[in-house]
Image (cartoon, rainbow, N blue to C red; front, top):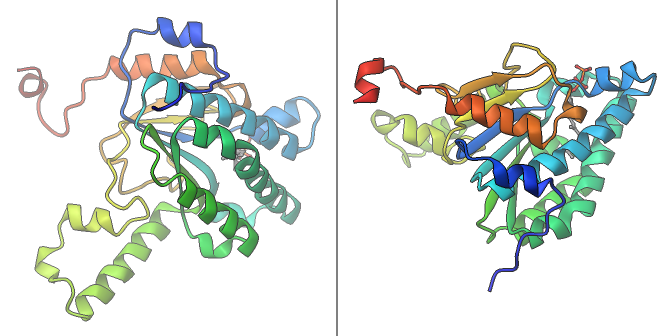
Length: 256
Ligand code: FPP
């Protein structure tokens, strides 16, 4: 029998929530640097505080019954940041995997890292691969962490693989539709995000899931990522619940 989830979230607050719960939530976790600078700290301290917010949001989503949570942790463009910040972030991902392993497994969460993992150190690639394998059968929630990820890069990588398959005769070009294309992306055809949350007030998508967010609802909050907690998550869900998703149809068509 499955064990009860081991969560360190504000359960009373989450349990009282009666609103909509998106099936797939994607988050652009922004504002770690400003959070640290406002406190006279090194940027890396902001990323460390950001990792605590990651635990809170992962466990809150698990508690609420979200099916997929996708977190934008490190973009293809972030490789251009100062070396100390890049290596500090890589160390943080490694620590996260070691520290959260037990909790992720106990809570039956499946980890999937999306992005160009070939650019990560061999050690980090091994740690990621091991936890992906160990958690492969977990079905309570999928946690997709985007590392060394770029939406354009993902589309290009998929296009190359599709072109190769077509050249090998394994794929008929006339049969390439959205569903086929989606299967070649890092997200391997998993459902698209219903809701994208971006923290720190910036109003842009920053090369995140460009194919997959075509019809996602956007929620932008001024809160800096390290301050993002259960209450902010519920506010985002509640905002999502007030949207009418039309997927290109009219309001009348959708409501009938
Ligand atoms: C953007 O804020 C944030 C990042 C580039 C890193 C995100 C990493 C974490 C939240 C920590 C670890 C994550 C995991 C999955 C363990 P920024 O640095 O661009 O902030 P700024 O715009 O204020 O400078």
